Length: 157
Image (tube, rainbow, N blue to C red; front, side, top):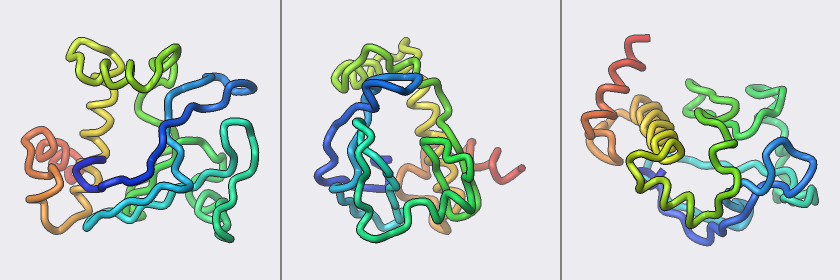
């Protein structure tokens, strides 16, 4: 969400290499990452690495928020301002199969790519949800026409 957050030390990683439905999907490793934002409070909850080794969450209970909003522990899990919740993502992880991070970046730039289109649509949707919770829609990408239209649709529901 480059419109709202600046990341540091966010290393590329992959999902599990065994015992999962989708293997070696390009992802990021959040435990040691940091970010800055005027708009978003981000809390990464990771319970295990790609080898199923437990991750230390600094004494925080990684399951507390999940028990309340996402008891089935579906990942990824997104909660925006306590108003909007999404368990899972808006596109299939199957689109990532066989790709590394460079190939994903190429797909995002390709206007005909199913993966690129899916990521762009999901990003616009999440941006609109965040923007709809902000009082000032003029920054962070909230003023783009497609985002304004999505905000109208969200507000109408």
